[in-house]
Length: 284
Image (tube, helix red, strand yellow):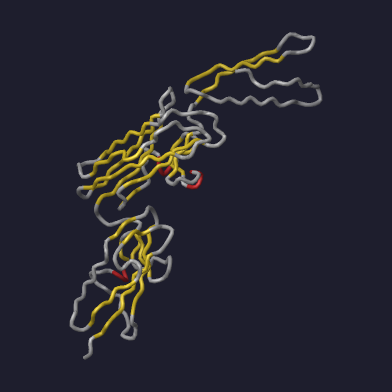
């Protein structure tokens, strides 16, 4: 297409900037030539070679909000946490992962319906994955984000690398992202606290030394009637079953369980669940 041009004057006392912008439709190499028509003189022209990328405006986020705050892919490249060469992101506990595809508002490209493909790399077969939901239409800069949902089926403990490839079709280069999926073992990112947002009981799925269930060094005074725990997760939403209370001396004390997490539920990174244990001491 013809560029936007306008006449201008060049003097020997100052320089004039001419900016050339390119909107690339395909990957590859292109020769760009600029020519200046000079009044009363022969035209002046020069050229250069430009490497092009077709996916500059393609982006992926973990939420439907603008991906600038939850980047997986931004401007056509995976972020460090989601780079398939490193797979630094770990997902545990969740049965699915959501990815939202879009084009940045300043992108004028249209991308045919993206086709997601998924692969799992593991030493065993305890994890299978599937694409539970995929985009149904083309991506444009004015359309809203489109969902790709990856479902997990864990049949045993494993640590696997998952690679998701977005095939953009029509000559656009595919884009890959990767992460680690943990099945079984401790549930990473789960936090339990005796004070809001201060994980002093369980941190990243593991009990802290003072609350070790093998040595149980923490002691509650006889004057304390109840203990309240705050539960949350630092990553994706995670579902936990109802708590199971075990007592070593049922004949001296019983426990009443209350709070919005007394029956289990979903832990969220944006809100806290509450579990209160009330001690009912038997008469001596």
